[in-house]
Image (cartoon, rainbow, N blue to C red; front, side, top):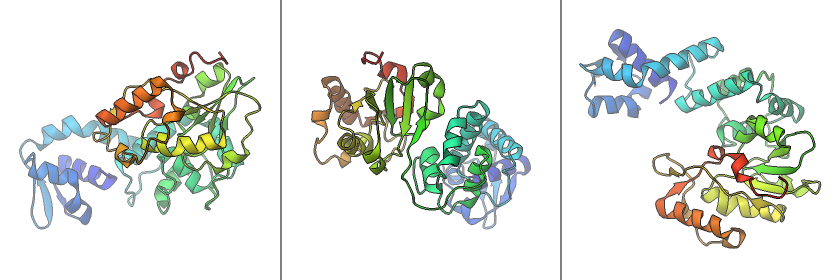
Length: 307
């Protein structure tokens, strides 16, 4: 759902009727409430409530709408023209929370120092370098929450981002940005975290590990294992793939786009331990994946010599 749909549902709850626009005509949520639950109906010009709508709205929508509207209002983001998707609002809330607790300050300083581009910030927070392109309102929201005046609007992806620590004992290269936003464990245990930007790893040709052991943390899905990890291994031959410990998620239920059906050959078998091969086989068999940030980094690093 996007904000227009969320706002329309709230208006229906308050007034019982809203005018139809193109967004509401095509809304999967609105059509589900009309056709499957029969708690809304529509004429040529309006959508209106039927018996049972209020109960469903209070159960499934009201609390999160109130959370979203409060967040957008408090952060001066509630503008008449916004069309943020619900998932965008959740990411913005996460950015705000991480800024409030100080977890994002080191990363924010690097974004400013490195003159980060829209694409880089898009990849960091939305896991897609092109997601923010052309979305001026969403770009502006990210800048407001990060307290950054400008982002460089170009295609330069040559910087890696580093969560530094005192007396580092090892390096963990992360496919996604999430671990760098949670610095407490890494710094307390002298672990330096790197983020190069998913598939954008050409910059690792110039990476200096300073003789430290280096490990790789990633999503256990087709892209993470069959595309990105072999490329990383070419750049840093001595890197070690960390074994995940989080519970798998069903690819279909999470609407994940990196699918095992894309496998053309088992080009990574020689790079995996026996335990890792078993985990991979089970994931493929059950059409599941493991999200990088759901793992406990402390558990993944247990048993390695730097400890």
